[in-house]
Length: 604
Image (cartoon, rainbow, N blue to C red; front, side, top):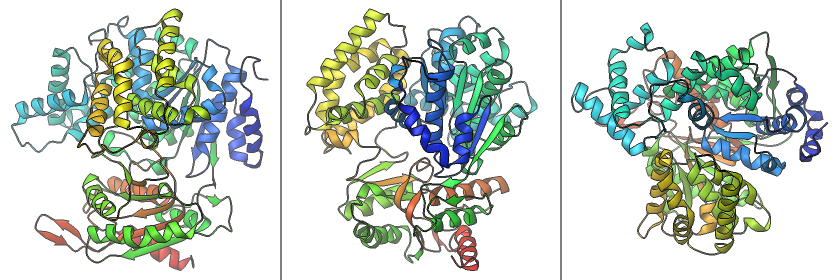
């Protein structure tokens, strides 16, 4: 039974799991559990309810649970859902990225005691500094315009953890570059984001005394999107769970493993699920998509997973569209033909229910130009976005949402905003200090409430009131300050977001008035009524001459895009891609050829 001091709101939602055997089995699991969750199967709901139950029934404060996920946006969504169940009352709960967990709960409390070869107090390199040191160290080793790529450097550092191994030296140039770059970081007294996880894993692997300390604080570890998190976290998880006595609840889908270029490997999830001391649970009922989309997605994947739609009678539209004049023609067709019809075909549907997905930021530039020419407002999520989503910028957006009217309905909740703000203070605050900081933030947000005001003025007031002072005091937030500076610049006169108001800033991860423009990678975890996929030509998705493993990952990326849709999927192609010397006419994506043939054979 739940503790008397804990919210029991989760019990009402838990009763809804009775009709889904997989979700119920995960909810009732007692030991280590791995949930293999297909698209739209309610895995986030299952995870949130399981965490709520653990904190209410299994763990007594001040002990708690840590929930690690892939990205800041994933952590933000989990936080929102948990707050709706009253989990703001649980300060013994960590929800965040693997980098945040390693920094706050491994390196900061135990790294100095373990005599790790990094400088304390920790200072994190900003993205700008990191990029500069990577470029400089590479140029010094190999000369300007060398052929080696920073993305491969990052993959090597994250995936090969034993620096004395043959695997580390198997890519000799990358190993040398990594060592030179890390030396430059240490010379400046810095670590970067990859260091957080690599040294966190080293701490856990080499120092047995750390295990009972972590287990005492977090007897339960939940991991979301396990397939995306890589070998370092996998080793941390195995060490804590199977040597340290921490109970594990992991959720993921190897079929949605699309970050191999970062070192992620979906096979690690399957390895975990196959252990005898793990209870595996499969979620196969899709609540998101119409039956036709569920069937087509399995055909696209080329695997029979036994997925089925919750409502088998629900209709779905799947369309293959030839736009003969290239990517710009595809984007123009989406704007002029598909979007107006989609808006009219369902009462209440808004731009926020529609997404255009593409392969990279270059394609995003072409799409954004066509959308702007069509007169639609949009939100863009790719590497060309004005700023990157980090904990601090997401918190500012949520403060904007609260001040723009969310305070009336407690979405987001003020207590949650205060707790997240206090967590930015790396130094431990005593109760009196935390209370003063919380009161100051509350007073500032209360004064900034307004249904209509410019986002530029709001962010400036927030920075002048509390944030700039915090950022001066906390050098470990340098990378996050850089993204806040980019947000501020984008909101300035002449900036990309100069006309944004406070309500739109608060809705930048899901505004009903803005069309969603995302890369296929960024779309993971999202869902929309209507998905328009552009650039589905051979040489774009997939690239030509890929290795078998990279071709499988490209297929999974196509599958991820297809499974974002509730009602409609429109797949646009031209039969060629633009090359350095003109069009390369290799035909449309072979994934489209296979899917259309399989759908025809199945009379779908």
